[in-house]
Image (cartoon, rainbow over all chains, first blue to last red; front, side):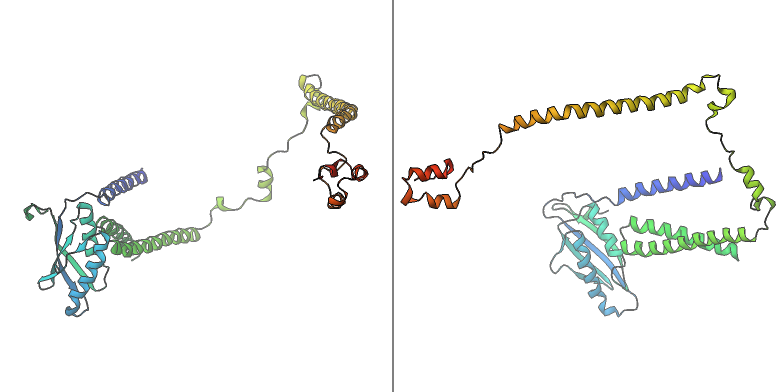
Amino acid sequence: MKRAVVGLIAAVVAVVGVVLLRSELMTVDVAQPEGSYTDVVVAAATVREDPSVREEMTRGLVSACRLLVNADVVEDSFLQTGDGVFAFRLRPGLDEFDRRELRGCLRDLRVQHLLLDVRELTTVAPGEDAGGRP
Amino acid sequence: MKKLSWIVATVALIACAGYLFVYIYRWEWHRALLVGILFLATLVGLCTALVLRRLTTAAARPPAAGDRPPGALERLRAAPVESKPFPWLRPESLDRTHIFIPVLLGGGFVVSGIAWAIERVAGSSARSGVEEQLAADLDGIAFPVTPLVPTDAELLAGGDDFADDAALRVLLGPAAAGSHR
């Protein structure tokens, strides 16, 4: 009886986990309006690295991650807005599923000794202010 | 201490599984790979420890009476009893219908032999007449005795210099006649 209960709980947890993963890992292309863009703000921290190379490492990670979502970094949009805080703009704008993928890629440990925290990731359509940011 | 080790290993396994799920959920594949390796290592370690514990328990247990391997007498007694073949041929069963079965089997054998003999006789008597009829039928579509096209020598012999030689055409036959220009 005890084993049956444990097995039932494990089965329920597994099913719920699979359902959650299925909904979160969906890759559906949602067409974005012409001229839309995505603004990204990240905070970078390095571990056992010179802070002077932080921007270079961040640029490398952004270059790798934007390939996953088929978007380009707008020229001269990569700016340092604070100590270790960088902002850049991607075109075309990313849909919900691409934003998830990009957020995961930026927070992942793709570049050794670089930790990135995504502070803002917003897609803006033309004629729409950024007030509706998630 | 041993119990603490089990608790730590179990907690590590659950934590690894949880983080694996979270990292996959958040699209952080590299972190998920690292935690997945840790999860597998913990799982293998736990399973190995479980098996070793079970083996140690079995080895440390004193042998009970029921664990003794059976002796020769027990094996003989446990063996299936030898069956007696052809029970219907036993004298006490002769007056019953069981005898019908061997009769049926034997009758089938005899009937099969008779059918085989009939088939052989019929085949051997019919074969000669059938072969003769077939040869007569094939004669109608056989190749002609004379060649269908003249040979190189016949072509040379029936050339321009002797084209009008009737005797030569008779000698060469109908195949060479077709090559006349």
